[in-house]
Structure formats: C-alpha cells, structure tokens
Image (tube, rainbow, N blue to C red; front, side):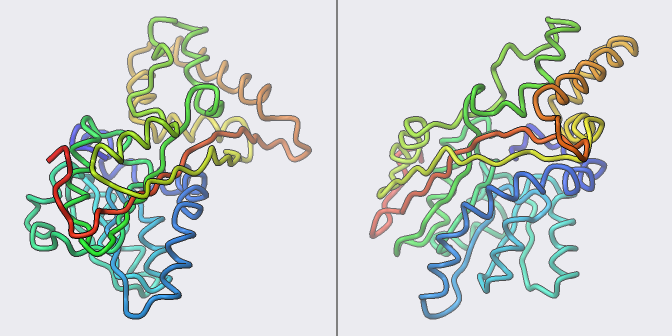
Amino acid sequence: MSAAFVPAWDTSVVSEYEARVEPFTGLFVKDLLEPVLKDAKTRDGPLSLLDVGCGAGCGSLLAAEHGLRVTATDVSQGMVDRTRQRAEEKGLSMECVEASGEELTSNDVLKHRLGHYDFCIAAFSLIFFPDPAKGLAEIYQCLSDDGGKVMLTAWGNKEETPAFQVFQDAFRAVKPETADGGKPGRITGSPSVLKSLLEEANFQDVEIVGPVSHHLHVKEPEAFYDRFALTSPKIRGQLASLDAKERHAVKEKVLTLAEERGGGKEDGSIAIPSMAYLAYGTKRSGGGQSNKT
C-alpha cells in the first residue's frame, strides 16, 4: 500500500479487511509462496523474507510458520500493529515495521538491511503504488546479491475479474458519472505488463504464472456488499459521494447482480471468480543497480 492510501487504510478498516478480504486474497498469496516454501525446505540455514504491503499479515504469517525470518512492512500503522499482534498470538517471531513501499531504502530500520533479504513478497500491494517502478527499484536494493527473489501478485483485466465489476456496474446503473469507467487505480496484471515491469527493474529469470483463478465466496449477497463497502477505499469514497437514496439504490443493485452472477447455490451463498497473475524475478548475480534507481 502506498503512502497515498494512508487515510483510507486506518485502524478502523483493519478488522474488516482481515475478516472480509484476506480469506480471498490469501488464496493467491498461498499460491505465490508455494515455490518459496518448497525451496526453503531444501536449503540450509534460515532464509529471510521482506513483506512489502503486508496488510493484516497473511503472507508474513505463512512464511514465518514455515521457518523464514520475516520483516513485515506496511504504510498503514494499523495493519502493522495487527500483523504483530497475530504473530504474537501464534507464538511467531517476526519484525513488523511501518514503511512505505516506495521509500524502503530510506526507512530508519530497512536502510541498514540493503542486500539482506533472500525473498521479497508484494502481494496485491505494489500494483497500487503511484510509481510501481520506483517500488521495484527499492525492493531490488533490499534483496540479496546472491540470487534474491521478488514475488508479486496482480489482478487481471476487467474480463478476468468479474467479482470486482459488480459494484461498478451498480454505480453505472444508478448514477453513471460515479462509476470508474473501467479504469482501476492500479496496474492491470498480464504477462506482458509484469514481465516488462520486472525486466526494466533489472530482474532476470522472470516468470509469470497465470491467470490463476479463485472464487470470491461469501455466505449471502449482503456479505458480498459489505465485503467491498466496508473495506475498499475507492468504493467507500464512491458511496460517500451519493445521497442516501442513491446509496440504497446502489446497494439493491449490487445485491441483485451478486445473486445473478454468483448465486444459485443451495445454501444461498455467492461465489464469483476473479483471476490474478503471479510474477517472479531474480536479482542479477553480483547485484548491480535497478534501471529505475
């Protein structure tokens, strides 16, 4: 999460994010970390991992549970605090640091760790940075010169992320000028975009996996509405721009669309798929500077 999102990701959102968003995004995080966790079992000595934009801690906790030495970072102090709390509850040793992903090398803690980390994960975080290339340049400097690896997740295009289109279609139906026009405030993942981004940052052995699909599954249409209305900074802003009657109309439309597109289950639940890409890159042997430094 970039510095531009600090006000939206304050403490009031953390518990809702953990309960409503992480169960879905965590499925992709597990996919992303799978090869790293397998690799960790075959190598001697503890490996280190930097989590950039840790959110409520899903990836950091999973890595720590498998024996990696983790530094979890996020621009939101609330997210950092919750990650630390969850680690303590699980009896895991983990360093948690408030830090912008675009300013890692100037952070008071991380600036002493340049070239330190074996792995860096940026799960659905770097794609929202105002300048993703700068974020990758910062990550590059934090990784070990001895084959340090970066791992990213990025949501696919509009057609590949139907679960994320329900609200915008509802806004468009109720008050068209409040819809986002199909232009998300993030990088849209694709093999070409992610490969180019990593190679321009001087990473080698770039591999793009996907699209990987999982279903966003909630117990009822109302829960689908709350999942976005209570956790998405963009949607919260869009709803706030409407009057009470318009907000009610949007909610009713979201409930209807969610049922149409993901309902029909005997238990009344909603399940709508969305796809993401997993991207991997290795720091060049001997280090060198990112092209974007």
